[in-house]
Amino acid sequence: MSAQTIFALATARGRAGIAVIRLSGPDALTAAAALAGALPEAGRSLRRLHDGDGEILDEALVLTFAPRRSFTGEAVVEFQCHGSMAVVSAVLGTLGQNPLLRPAEAGEFTRRALENGRLDLARVEGLADLIDAETEAQRRHAVRVFGGALRALVEGWRADLLRAAALIEATIDFADEDVPVDVLPEVAELLNGVMGEVQSELRGIGAAERLREGFEVAIVGRPNLGKSTLLNRLAGRDAAITSTVAGTTRDVIEVRMDLAGLPVTLLDTAGLRESADEVERIGVERAKARAAQADLRVHLVQNEGDAPEIGLEADDIILVAKSDSPRPGGISGVTGAGVEELIGHIGETLSRRAAGAGTASRARHRRSLLIADEHLGRALELIGQGADNPDLIAEELRRGIRALEEMVGRIDVEEVLGEIFSSFCIGK
Ligand SMILES: Nc1nc2c(ncn2[C@@H]2O[C@H](COP(=O)(O)OP(=O)(O)OP(=O)(O)O)[C@@H](O)[C@H]2O)c(=O)[nH]1
Ligand SMILES: [Mg+2]
Image 1 (cartoon, rainbow, N blue to C red):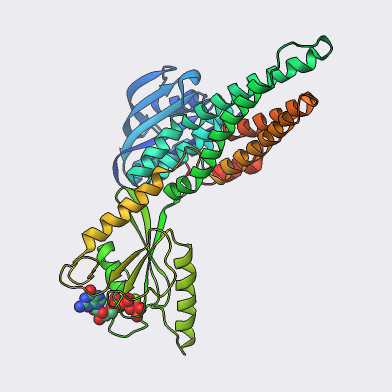
Image 2: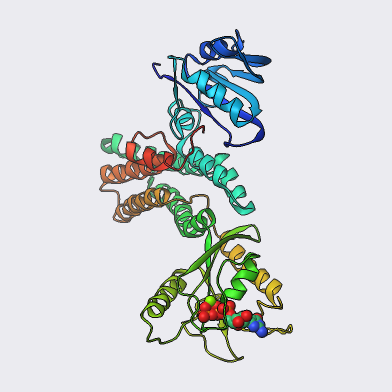
């Protein structure tokens, strides 16, 4: 292995109790020893770190990992230094002077873990999600994927499809010998089973994507009903300008929050009305477009029974604005009446949708699942036509298996790897 040894700060920059600086590669131990003195291949030691002139930089806990037991699959050293800017700069500076080392690129440690077979692609994605997780629901989903849930699912399908392929291959091999048993019903059963699960994952991807990226909830209604006031109340801060002037809000204002453990972006929108004002008209168009795309809409109306300004969709909520004293179906951003109920209602609705989330959660997964579904569907069609085309059936099965393997497999399509690793930070 000729990979160069890399180093980076693995924790966030800034003042902290501890900062972790990581080295990975064939020269990790030698390079670390230049600062910390000779180190065991694996273990932990409390050491003084020195620069090239022998000046003490810090006292650090030094962890060493042998290649077979490390995150990257290479020799790894971690310096757990004191987390000050000055200590981190001094240690990174000293490491940077060592010709055996170079600074790591974003995601490079994880990339090496993938290349050395320590993680599969699905676990790498789970890891990226885990690092990005902002809410409890995101953490739970990411932990499951990082724990290998997607891999387990795919392995199960793969085993069934390999068995189906073996049965078909047998009919090809023994074509001249009149195999007595008809294998097609069993093959069809295996395919139907896998396809059912593949399709269920496909149905759950929308919800899983939302879970990863966040749900959008738009507040809509005529001008001056208190949309911006309500957004500010929900956000707990003055994110949007409010005023007695109808037509105050023009741009869509976004506030990201944790609602019932789910990542939610609240959208405040321009009041909906016909307007002669060019800027307000643009605002109204934007409001309509964003509201239509949102996962859920909260429609404010002036009086009970008023029709909402834009079409209602499933689960949308209608509330009577400025209901300052508590009453069912009312809301007040000023007094807070009805706000707890609204949060509960939104949380319940979105939790229900999030519960439909499968394990697969990315556009990449959807592509693979769709391709697999297509090939398996064609194989089933061929089976329906009788036993005349075992070669074609076997080929469709192979393609279906390959598509599924790509979901978790070690593929070296640079484009895909680039797409995945672009989301990582340096030091991971
Ligand atoms: N009494 C009462 N007044 C409210 C309430 N919500 C907002 N207001 C007042 O109504 C006026 C308009 O509030 P905004 O929040 O700016 O209304 P908006 O719907 O965002 O208006 P546009 O951005 O113009 O569409 C302000 O003077 C608010 O103080 C409420 O719940 N009760
Ligand atoms: Mg407003």
